[in-house]
Image (tube, rainbow, N blue to C red):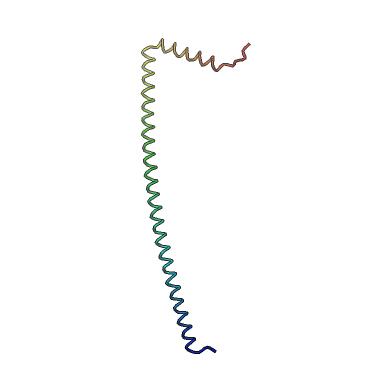
Length: 111
């Protein structure tokens, strides 16, 4: 039905198309690998950057917490020293504060 030259031409065309398809698939695979590698590299850099930022923020938060703790301890020691140095005025101030708070927090509907 088809001549030998037609069959040969069809075989050559088929082989050429198959070769072109394989070459195209290789090119797509290579491009996909390059994109994958680039995205992986970018994500790795972003993760490293985020890790450094978190570590820095954690370190700064610990420093601030430590500073606040020291300030609170210093204030507590100062207050304790003042109470021991002047017990009568300290008791009077505590009594006054207690009286004011009691009046503010007491129920309003008294008989």
